[in-house]
Image 1 (tube, each protein chain N blue to C red):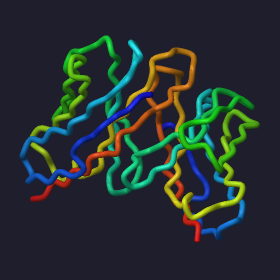
Image 2 (image 1 turned 60 degrees about the vertical axis):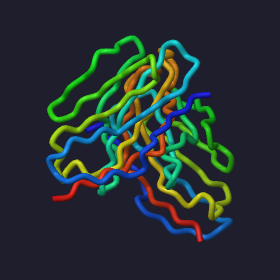
Image 3 (image 1 turned 180 degrees about the vertical axis):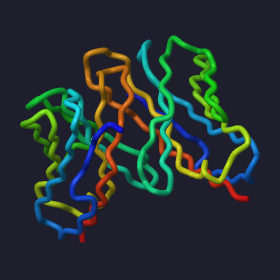
Amino acid sequence: AQKVTQVQTEISVVEKEDVTLDCVYETRDTTYYLFWYKQPPSGELVFLIRRNSFDEQNEISGRYSWNFQKSTSSFNFTITASQVVDSAVYFCALSDGRAGTASKLTFGTGTRLQVTL
Amino acid sequence: DAGITQSPRHKVTETGTPVTLRCHQTENHRYMYWYRQDPGHGLRLIHYSYGVKDTDKGEVSDGYSVSRSKTEDFLLTLESATSSQTSVYFCAISYTGGPGEQYFGPGTRLTVT
């Protein structure tokens, strides 16, 4: 069975601080995909990134970066110079990589990030 | 914008009554999903569909049924609502199967009293 663990339930930072959200996963599949989603206070779920199990290169998108380490089964998310608009619940998720079948996501329980002035 | 709408957006119902939630998409994607979101559990998959009349169970399917008679609509039915089904329900679509990210609708907040 697949499992995703987000150890930090809540994180509070002051604006401009860097913050890292941890995600650890368990799977027996050799091919799998990892995702991060953002859920702002308005409630919608926003897709941020997808990473496959064969690509361990770090990814950077503006102030966001992701560190995938297969050796430790982790896919951590860092926000650099956080802003109040980053306040949200962030979910890490995992799916198997079987093409042609439904993408069944297993989600972590989420990390609530609060960024204050 | 993935063109996903959910109706109703809010509903309060009594224990024992049937409830149907509707998910509608405008882009003819093959794969559709229903999740529920509860504090401390994240999102959990209820049912999913991989085509018209093709559906299967997810992790928390007990007490729920689904139907998909048209590509654009995926219905979730609670045959006899219970208080434990009070939750926020999200519909999602994916453009492709296994590897594909999912895009979510705005959610339906259901309260069972």
